[in-house]
Image 1 (cartoon, rainbow, N blue to C red):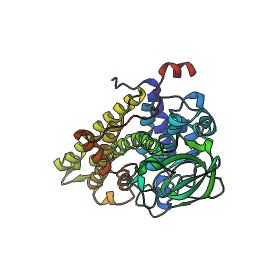
Image 2 (cartoon, rainbow, N blue to C red):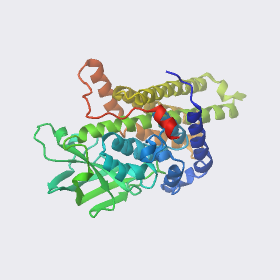
Image 3 (cartoon, rainbow, N blue to C red):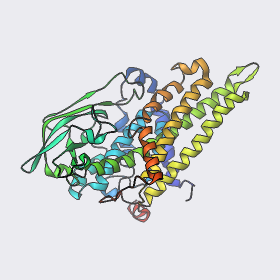
Length: 404
C-alpha cells in the first residue's frame, strides 16, 4: 500500500475542505439551533460532483475511487456530521447499491440522475420495530400481476423529506423458514401515489440534518423497480452497509481530527496556574489519545479504500473501522469538552456539537454491539461471509484516466 495521496486526491481534499469551512462552518450553528438542514447543502454537493464522486463517468459520475469518497467524508464530517450523512446515504447506501446490483435499465433510470445530482436518494431499512433485527421488519410487498403493492413504514430515514428515490426493503413470499430469505429490495420514487414522508425533530445531534419517516400505503411499483431477485434483499442490504459503514467510519475520523485541532488550539490559548493548560499532563493525556486515534482511524479507512479499489470483500475490515472510529470520535469529542472546561459545555465552541453528533454514529448503520458480535463471530469461526451474487466493482484506474 502507498499512503501518499495522489494529486487528484489532494484536489478533492482541498475542494471539499474549502466548501465545508468557507460555506458551511459560518452558518452551521444557526441551522443546528433551528433543527433545519441548510437548503444549499444538497445542491452544492451536486455542483461539486460529490453526489457521483465514485460513480463511473458512463453513469454520470466523476469516476474517482473509493479513497476519494473517504477523504470527502472525512472533510465534511470535520465541520458537521449532517454534511457527511447526506453523502453517506445518497452514495454509500443507495447509489453504490444500484452500481452493484442494478440492471443496466435501472442504472440509466435511477443511478444516472443520482450521480449527476439531479435526484437525491435515501435508504429504507429501519422500521419503528426493526433496527438491528432486520428480519423483524413488517413492511410487505405483494405480487399483483407484473407489479408489487408495497405497504409499511420506515423510521429514522436520512433525507426522508429531501430525496426523490428510496431503496425500500420489504417482505415477499418465501419458501424458506429463514425470515431473512423473505426480504426483497425495490427502488421507489417518492412521488408515487401512496408514499408519504415527514420530518423528525428533537434529536440529540445531527440537528442540521434531515431525518424522518417514510410510509408506503398501497404503493404500486412495476417489477422493473425490483433490485436483484426476490429474497435477495437481505444480501443487498448488508452489501449496502459495507459501503455505508465505510463512509461513516471515514467521516468519524474527521470528527476526531476536528476535536483534536480544537483542543490543541484552546490548550495553547487558555492559561491556568500561570501556564498554558497544554502544559498540564492530564490535558496532554487527552490530546495524545485524540492524536493516536486519528492516526489509527485514518489508517483503517485507507486500508478499506484500498480493498474496495481492488474489488476485495471488506465486511470484516469495514466493521472494524466503523466500530473503532465511531467510538473514538465520541470519546475525542467528549474529551475535547473536558479540555475546554465550562466553555466546552456551551455552543460558543463547536466541541459540544461534535459530541452530540458523534453519539448517533455508534447506533446507526449497525450499533457498536452489532460490530462486536460480528468481530467475535468471525474470530471464533461462527460467522462466515457468504458469497454475493455480485460484488461492488473494483476501481479501474486506466478507464478513469481515459474518460477524463
